[in-house]
Every structure is written in C-alpha cells, then in structure tokens.
Image (tube, rainbow, N blue to C red; front, side, top):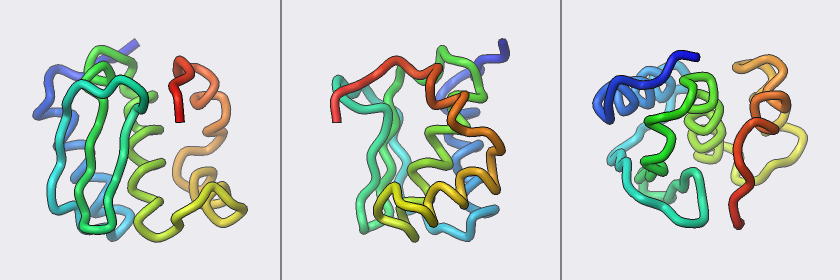
Length: 103
C-alpha cells in the first residue's frame, strides 16, 4: 500500500487530476472533516479530509476524481458513473474500501 508523503503531495495530485479533467480548482484544503471525505463548492473550493493523507493513494485518487467530477456533474447519476469508470476503471471496488461516513 502506497500512502501520500504529505499534504503537498496530495494537493499536487489534486492539481494533476484537475488538469486532466479540465477543472479549475481555485482553492484546495486538507483539513479535519468529521462527516465527509471531501466537499466542493461551485466557486471552485475543494476540501479534503486530512485522514486521506495516511490512506492508500488509490483511495485518495477515488475521492479526488469523485469531487472534481462534481464540478461538471452535480449528482451521482449515470453520466457521473460513466465518467468515474472511464477515469478509474472499477471504481466501486475502491469505493467499498472507504470507511462509511455520514452524508
């Protein structure tokens, strides 16, 4: 299992994915979050749970792509699922590895 070295490496990965997905991420925060793995705002602010830093990079990629896709697809409908699969393959297996969080 490969984990992130630090917050900077994680943020750099967010920027890599943002460029690949053609998304403008204006602000990226890695901070304690009690109920979610991540959140995004329409203004381009992304917040990620700091617990992700100690987790497998595959899980981090899942959360990063999940949030970035919400800039163009606001729900978890068919299009969002197709895009997740296109970028991450069998993303459901990774999704199941995350500890459940409240909405």
